[in-house]
Figure (cartoon, rainbow, N blue to C red):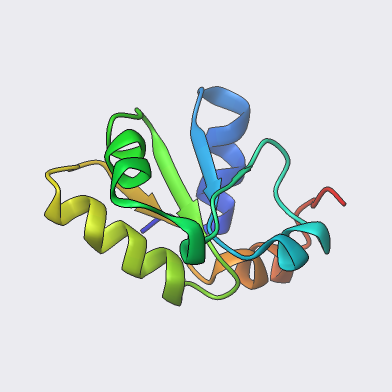
Length: 101
């Protein structure tokens, strides 16, 4: 788990792989700059394996449910360092952090 403020600081200091697991319509309403869209409804086992190979992997959704599920699947595959954004994009926005449309 990573808090919105921790993620905001991390984005300016490190290279991260930021994955938005919401649906396209949600992503288009606003997402964190640099996020790659990988909707849970379309995530295949192969795509999960590909994500598991990424360093500094941070996953988020609307509120944390879907991203938490994806994070648990990745952990079950042996991915030890995966972060789930606490509160999802709603948590991010509650801190008035920037989103891209």
